[in-house]
Image 1 (tube, rainbow, N blue to C red):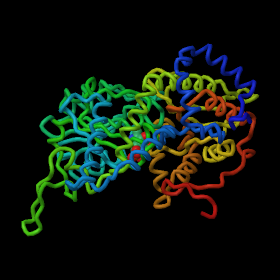
Image 2 (image 1 turned 90 degrees about the vertical axis):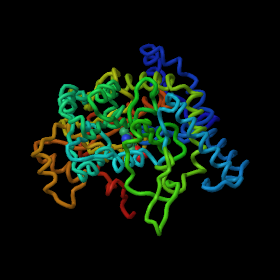
Image 3 (image 1 turned 90 degrees about the horizontal axis):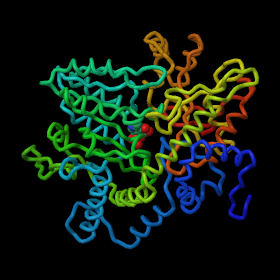
Image 4 (image 1 turned 60 degrees about the vertical axis):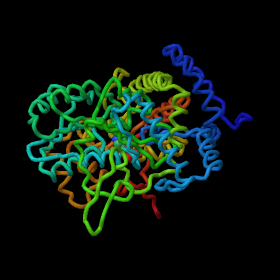
Length: 500
Ligand SMILES: Cc1ncc(COP(=O)(O)O)c(C=O)c1O
């Protein structure tokens, strides 16, 4: 350890870094992130942590917390539903944050409203429950989608709309645009039709083409763009592309605060939403005797109850933080590191010449971000239990994500699972979990479900990537059984350790 508490790089790491910099000289232009990491995120290196789950959530800088703490300590803030002094001060901050969100995404004045929600899922639920799905109308979504977008199909179905999935091509896991066009063309333009896709996949990292937005709108569709995995490392410019609805979570962009997301609604589309209920905070008037209510206009009609009013000012701080680093700098950095990681993983071989890693989705950085889904295999080609890999990585201070990442469609396509496979998996009944499902798939000719996800983000550095590659190299020539058995289970998306 050096006096700073940070372990010095090994000679092997220095050598690898030199090769990396020679191959990706533009990485040097992102050096200000190394300086910021040392100053504002020192906890990572002091503790020797390698954080590789940026798609799960980004990391906050100490300065964000400090600035937020100082703001709270300096002011008296209170429930914003009043006109009193403290309430008005709070409303002021919330509205400042709202303006900063619209400005950050370059929304043309008056064209979008920003609704604060709990998270991206809260934003998506608003669309699901308020979109005027109806018989004769359709909900088309790509097979690559987070479950919070998949779940909207239950609202569509219950209101009698048809639900259809646009498939992905293999092995790249990109949208099959020809098949999508057929689905979009089949719409009855007189009925409400909603098309939903992610700007970037939280499974494969694929950046889906944003020109699909206009392509669908021209055919009479409203478009829901799930930007949750895209905006942490890319600029979304709402003056260039104009989706009707955009969902995102701020903790995925800059780590803090949690509990605040946003639904951006295009003003034209706002008129098409019908809220199924009202709540405190969303009405201009409500009567019990008269059994009537008048919904508040614009975003206020969607912000149920009391907003997370102490956290929301931290959104403005976070956006400023991101701006000060520069989203283009982050993107360049993540692209260089992703390219290196892809190359090194593809080159990994056991002594018998078998490849160690299988990557799902694109294997170069064209139209892809820094999220990689992969599996590792032993010298006989047997799958290594990804949960055990996660556990072994943790022992080395490396935080990965494993499972299906709430995106079953991308994983099913990646593994080539068929309708018969699904029937066999679902035959397990009420006890079916991803782990149990994977066991059934393994019995069906060695198929698989689930993967390891490595995702890079704003504070990723070369050492993070190098440490992961070194960890993976440590599995060379290790038989599946030799790496030991996993000691935790995952139940309802919660990790259960023995005795917990
Ligand atoms: C693409 C995508 N959409 C939606 C979500 C849901 O976000 P949240 O859990 O913050 O609601 C996620 C979370 O991982 C995501 O990656």
